[in-house]
Image 1: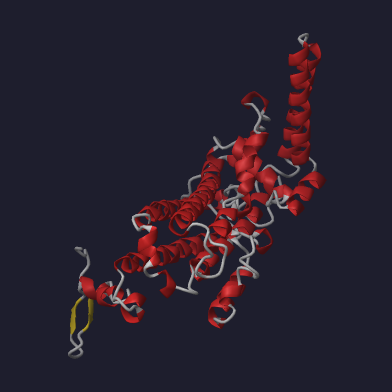
Image 2: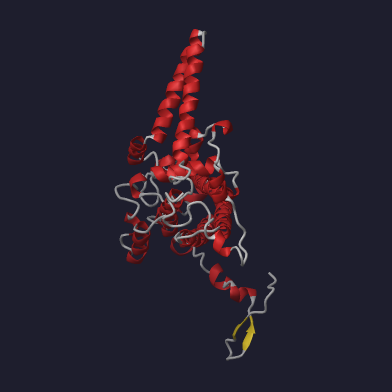
Length: 400
């Protein structure tokens, strides 16, 4: 690896400096000494070949988890600010994109593990007990920081997901701190709630509700004038289903009941912001915001793919045996492949409420001006402050 910069470190022989070597900079010797095979020290027949692969794969996982946390925490730091301008949205999208690329690698990495047969694994499995991937603090931190709530989790055996860390106080402290801090989902919710256009000036939600009412009335009239009995019945059923579906969206009480049930995550106000960004994503000011929402769905999708691949690998390698950490193994892992573990499930379901383009409320000239992206120059910086990205100024809600 060639380095463009000439770095130097103190020489071990004295105070003189020497150029940094690849081996020193990456601490290669230390890194390559971390694969200690339990079978080599505890086994009767010496080291088991495939234990080396097993250790390397999981150490690589932990390194990638560390990088995901590094990117995720930087995104969360930006989103805590009162104002998020367009340049910051580009940074956010770039870093979340990086997370998705890493997750794609993790999904594919399972295939390397699949080159190990059940017999290969059985040769060293007993040396792992009671260690388990369930004890990965970094993976739990990623889940918590993204926004998976304890109430939505499947219990691990007889305890919660915190149980494996109870005897490791430093690790438990980190997990507790993450659980008591706002997650990315919380920050996204605050951001969406401040989307311009939700307040009195344009009042997107009232206009959207009116459009939905017109659409439902058209469906009802189409059903009423239909002369074919079977088609008429089907059209009435479709109208009634659509009516119920939109009621669950537009009625705040209905929405809150679904949040309490656990099938929705966002507040009603935040969901309104998400819908507005989705319908007007072609507007320059909403383009980066729409991309961000899509990237968050990619993160959820890739985590689901990883969970799915991992569960199938476990079934393939140990069948229905109990996991090394005491879980139900495959059955536990399979239960996590569900919408309960999708953080941004509301974004996936927005498609249920999309309306045809010709029914989307027309933006007023004033609203268009608000959504116009100004490029910052020395002369326009103050003016730009009044035209920041959707919902990115604290307390902007209702000031249209």
